[in-house]
Length: 154
Image (cartoon, rainbow, N blue to C red; front, side, top):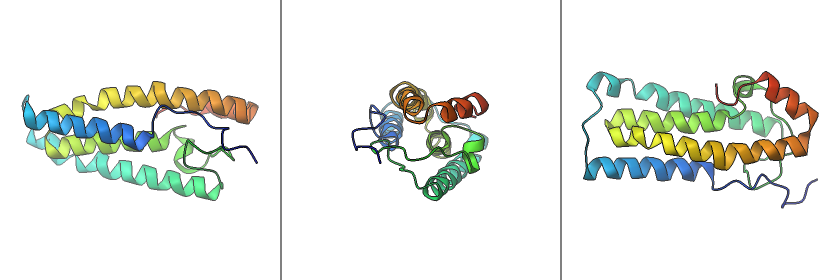
């Protein structure tokens, strides 16, 4: 078993990154609205929200089945390739982005949708890049083969 210090060293907890971005977008929208998302677009906001929740739930189930840690602050114990991990190397982060977009659409908050861009950028460069370097070092060739086969996002 790996030492606790054997982790990816991510910049911040991924749920917190989206929570901060989404909250900032909603607050900015309340303080300085730039217009509202059109009603037909708002109506479809439930779709990405529900898809994001489902993606995260299915991903967590597969991680539990593989008996590996969900937290990026704990060592990875196994490579998960089942369920949503067949479609994306980062289905939980895809789920967070979908939830972020869904809330932005449902609330009609244009700034909440704009805030998705920096949140995804922080996830990409402050979390995913670090995790990928860590997984290459920790899991070696099996991870390399998986990364060659499965897209980073979708």
